[in-house]
Each structure stands twice: as C-alpha cells, then as structure tokens.
Amino acid sequence: ETGVTQTPRHLVMGMTNKKSLKCEQHLGHNAMYWYKQSAKKPLELMFVYSLEERVENNSVPSRFSPECPNSSHLFLHLHTLQPEDSALYLCASSQDLGQGPDTQYFGPGTRLTVL
Amino acid sequence: GQNIDQPTEMTATEGAIVQINCTYQTSGFNGLFWYQQHAGEAPTFLSYNVLDGLEEKGRFSSFLSRSKGYSYLLLKELQMKDSASYLCAVMDSNYQLIWGAGTKLIIKP
Image (tube, rainbow over all chains, first blue to last red; front, side, top):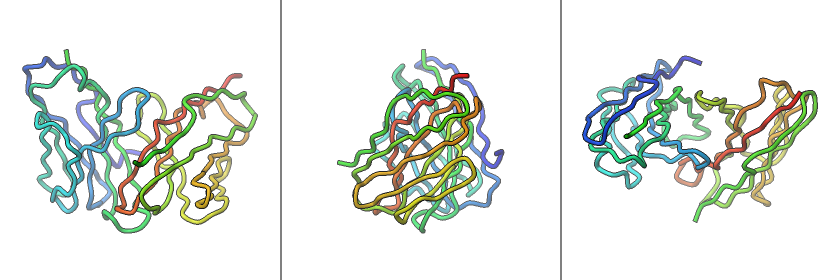
C-alpha cells in the first residue's frame, strides 16, 4: 500500500533542533491524522484535519505544531523536543471525517529518536 | 473512561488456528476495526464490524457482539508471514477511533 507516504522514515535529533515530518496521501481523501505510537501503548491521536481545517488537538504540547497546506499534505513541525517524545509517528488519511465506517489508511511512519 | 483490552502477546504454530480477543468500553459505538501491523511498517486495515456476527475474509474472520462489548479476530491456516501485531480499534459516538495496545502474534514452525 503506497497510498500514504511519510518522510523521513528515521530521524535522530537533539533537544534543541527543529525538524519537520512530512506526510502525503494519494488517495483523494479529505481527512488526515497524526498519531504517536509508543511501545506497548495504544495509538495516541495527536491532530486531525478535515478539508485542511484542524478539528482535533488532543492536548498535544506546543512543541508539536501541525500544518496542512492542502488536503494531500500534512506536516508536523518539531522543536525543543524531549527524550520521551521518541516514538513512531504515524500519518493516516480517510475519505471523510465522521461519516460512517471511515477506514483510516496509514503511512509507514517516522521513527523519531530525541537525544 | 474509554478502554480497549486485548492480550499483549500470543504464540501459535504454523498451520494452526488462533483467536485474538478484544473487549471494549466506549462512549457510543460506530463500528470496530482490526488492523495488522508488521514490525516497522504501517498498520493495514483487515476488517470492520458494525453488526453482530461473523465476517469472513479468506483465512481471516472477525466476530462482534455489541451486547458483550466483545470482538475476536480468527486467523486460520497460520503462515509465518502472519507474525505481526494485531490492533483492535472502536469508533466512538464522535467517530473517533479508540485503540487497543495491540496483540503481538508470534508464529512458530
């Protein structure tokens, strides 16, 4: 499944660095999501965008800043992260938010390590 | 609060059958999803249940009982490539997915 792509696949950064994660979906979907996946924990929903508008921000620290310039692209800007932010960051998309069985399709994720 | 429970890890033998259970308590219910995630890869959609009963897709079947807040994923004729984590997720009344922590399935020859 290559409908959702993410770059980079791996990222190591220091606590004072600024970096960005990129997600692109080629499925013609209207909703996009950022999730954090830590070992042995449930997926944590971070942000949801529908038609380029942010509709959900689940109490995510301000050191994570999302951007959705259009319905195909989603970014996650990172700055002054903490070691506990090390995790797999997954992007997903779905056809339309909040309408029936809206299956989400995932990208391969960015494995982030904060030193 | 909302909660999804599934076993942390299971082991099964190649060629056998395994059942992975999922119980849930959520604010509303708009369907239950199962995803498969191989190590280092994206979760991929396996099945969706919104009505009680069994849905069969080849070697994989998924069952739902809404009154019991219970689902299972049944994998038949296990193959080594089925070694992966299996994620259960429930769509709540706000159409938000609530995720379980996943079940790591280990297949032995």
